[in-house]
Length: 160
Image (cartoon, rainbow, N blue to C red; front, side, top):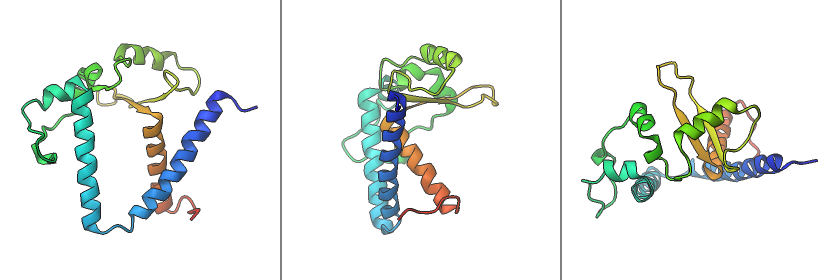
C-alpha cells in the first residue's frame, strides 16, 4: 500500500523526470539564448529574495533594482553569514533554525519537514554545519540536476 510519503516521493520524481527533459532541451540552446535565460533567472531570483527575505532586503538595500540585476553589483556572502542570519535568509517565516536543528536531531526516518520541505546538512567539517532547506519543487530541480549529471557521466542510460 502506497503511503502519503510514497506519493510525495513519486510526485517529486515525476516532476524531476519532466524537468530532466526540459534540461536536455536546454543543452541545444545557443550561447546567446542561454545567457539571456541565465540573466532572467538571476533577476527573478534576486527580486524574489529581496521581496521575501529580510536578510537580502537589508543586504541589498543600497542597490537599485530599476534595471536588470547584475551579479557584479551584489556583495559576496558566505556560509557563516547565511547560517548566522538563517531565520532572516529563509523566505518561509515558519522555518526557524532552532526548530530545524531539533527536527534534524530527532529525525529517525525519511520525511518532509512541515510536510513540504527536504532538509539536508553538511557534516560541519569546517567547524560550521550548513543547513539547506528545499521546497518540493526545488527538490525536484535537485533530483533532475543529479539525474542529468549522472547521465552525462554515463552512469544512467538516457530515456530519450
